[in-house]
Length: 102
Image (cartoon, rainbow, N blue to C red; front, side, top):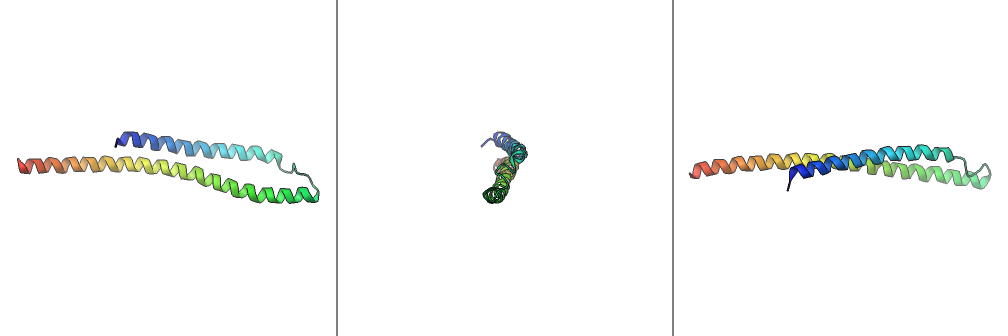
């Protein structure tokens, strides 16, 4: 495993999460221009109420996806550092063992 590649992919994944979150916010703001488009009558009110509940839930889910992508990117970067530390420790331990065995 190449820790630098893992770290790089983690950073890239973090950027994907950030970008997705930003675009989600822009999309949500754009949709607000259409609120009330279903009309003021009874059916329009029912559609509007359903839209509000469903869209709120959907945006919460999508926001969670964006947050999880960012978090996974940070986790990958941390994993890369842990691999580097483990590899360094193993190399040091093997070096000491080689010295002991002469």
